[in-house]
Amino acid sequence: MPYDSETFVSALSKEELLGHLNRVTREVNFLDQRTKAKGDIIFNGLIGRKGFRISKVVDKGDTFLPLILGKVEETARGSIISIKYQLFPGAMFFLAFWSIVLLAFTAFYSFFIPNYNYASICVLLAMANYVVAMYFFNRQVKSSRKVFHQLINFQMKD
Image 1: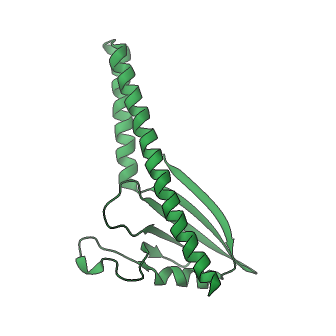
Image 2: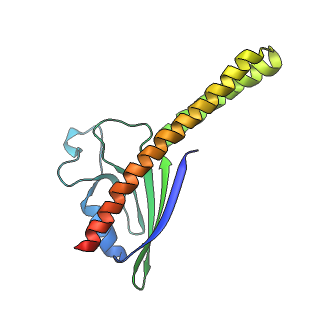
Image 3: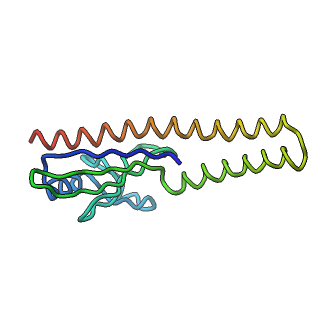
């Protein structure tokens, strides 16, 4: 499944980092229009004592928007931030579902009703499905990573 990670060191303390993230993050209930992002809100999600679970605020839905899972550890001179970018569970489900369906059709056309043209088409569609998902996921990871890094670097300049 699409996945990316990074670890970096920040001069900010754990409390400063999580506090700053908390100021630009809002917990959103998409069924309640009053919780829509306003002003300085950059991320949707939750900030906890040990880490965070956020995603970049977007104007319209994006299937491949990464969920950013972060853990922050205190050090003597700041903090260590470990970040994992992954697809939201619903998007992972649909990617896995269509991959399994297409691979099942590949097996069906390979072994039960031998039609190697259809089997080839199904396996090519399964690969294309995965390649397209990886492309759009990586594109969104770059965008989210850029926003997150700008946020951290901006805070460090203050």
